Image (tube, rainbow, N blue to C red):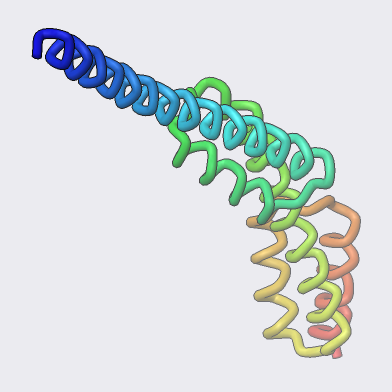
Length: 139
């Protein structure tokens, strides 16, 4: 009977050890998955920055925030995003300015010039649009 009790105790001890081992393995697997997720986000941040893909960079930053990455680690990506968004705004304003100039509608062109000035587009297309507007208004 005593031998059976020792066997039962050893079995119970082994089961406890096994349960602890499984629990620790699950923790390690979660840590490993988190590390893979972090690496995937880091890669996505790099690719989006290199490709100048504004939406992909926004998505990668959101994923990084969800993974609770350090804010300082995201600073370069956020700065890159700001520059990309500024360039996008300028590109959109320049395109809108061209479309407005092609429309030959002074009201539309005035609004596009105001938006382009706000976006900070280069001086040359702005000067051309203002020159065209002046010519239309003289007629």
